[in-house]
Image (cartoon, one colour):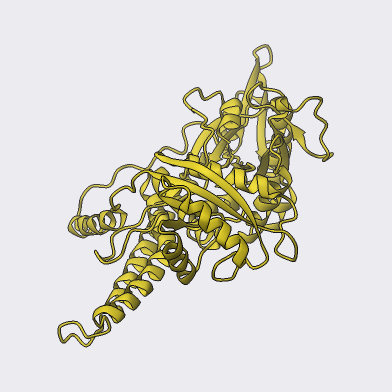
Length: 494
């Protein structure tokens, strides 16, 4: 996994994370499905102290009863099924040795290592063994050719303690999953279900859980189709339900569609609320954020998707410009498209930032692939061109590489752990944020007897006031926009 940042102008910086959420109940028939670089966004919130207080609480008025009903519906959507039990797994990686589907920026061994890391993220899930088998036809029903499929089947039969197989491909078709489970006698997981389950385990806020619920919809729809097919074979699942004119399948699809609509509606309400909070802020990689902000309360975790929710942390640049580092989500190579779609609401903060800082673990053997994965996701977010063109590349963990020399001339080398390179990073962040936001740092001489100082406190960000009592003036260091500076010159000509 690579990682990254996003800056706003006091500025906000988004670091790695991937947002997610948990699914609600559909019907007792359906089994519950199981359910990594990043980037920071930085936004400069330039304003005098005292602005940006949280909104006042709203009293319970006429809509209180309606609000309670909505809250109950939301709790139902967020309801989780029973936690899955412990799993002992065999990790199987199908290695495409040639052709257009052969990976170019990684190796089978590194892909297996990432798959093992995913499993190790989950409590009570253990990898008992792993195997790499070549394949020409990863999209076929049995994934492998007859020879390798037989080798794999015999290996599984020779491991009596395993409870599941993790097949390291993005998504298994329902037919393939059923055929493999029938052949091997154990549950078979793909990357989609494993990553989704990791998200479910790490989701904390309502928004994260709702996004997981939305990401589970395609899986629930697939499970529904399979279960209905099974009912049709066993006891006529297509019959009408108690004279309602609706078949069992139609009823279940309707319930699933209603569930999806409610989830999207709830996410939209949360999105609008976040937009309001973002506006209020404008008026006034966890380890790296901790190093930049000095926030001792942050506890970095060396774990995939340790955080799935946006968090914001205040910090200061060399000119004392206040910035907000916004910690978002991490990226995973070959992340299923449906998951990215579900988490787009969380990633929308990137579009409102003033600067993206892409932070990479430069010591990772797949750092080039991770960069490509992160930039691909960012491009798919339809970000403004100026954001993509001004990305600051940061190479983190250089302390793990002896005599490190950057292959990229514009990259900034840092060690968040040791504090190396942080001042250079802050200076570069400040330079671009000021340029992007159309602001400058300068010193203005003011007459203390007039209203100019008060005006500057209102229209600019006052950094420092050096009073000269002998002549009743002061040198005032400010961060000010070009438009405000023009007004200042007209109102207070020297």
